[in-house]
Length: 260
Image (cartoon, rainbow, N blue to C red; front, side, top):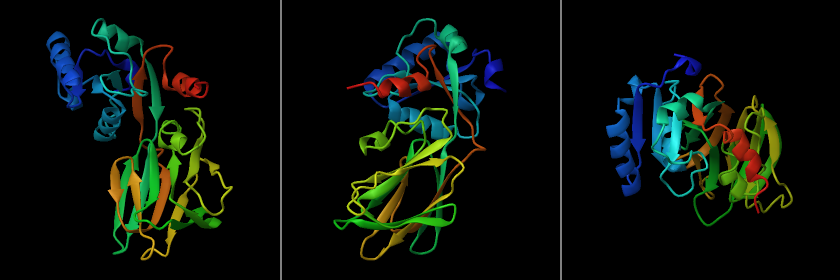
């Protein structure tokens, strides 16, 4: 059922394990009922950004909109927690559609590990020695050797997370872009990354993998001892996030750029 046509009469509540979230789950379920996620018109996630990411991953391809209420610590992806008028808030909410990243990481045995990332795919050194990486875009090598702690590819939705902490750019939520951001680059020292089309196919090849082992992580899914990582946006997968009016993800991304 399209998001716009939902009545939001059946709600599935999901909560993190912290006491505050579990108590909220009990109160809200008693007040509004609680159905299984696949039966719901909307899923309400009670927790922090970590729970929102877990819920989005668990509901891939379901096309069920997810509305988060903050019972965690950060809550960038969450709405303000209030128990009253929940149905009305859902009906008035603004819906943001996002697409995850697709990662295929090939390990030393040649096995392909596939996963999806809503925020970012990061490639990171496993030991004390810096990683040596080669970066190709759409089959053309653009950086023959990057000596660094790692590199990441972030979606607009994830550009304010790890990407921002690594001095990467904040991307408007509807920009058709991906951020390619180095993590503690040593050579070339002045390379600060690149903005890429969200149609780009990115290949990261590990140089000297035996001496300088590298892992690849798609959100919370990690593959160790990788030789090559291929990343692109999964345009066929739609995820729907709901935000109170005036506080949608686009507004949050803009506001984040004016915080000091």
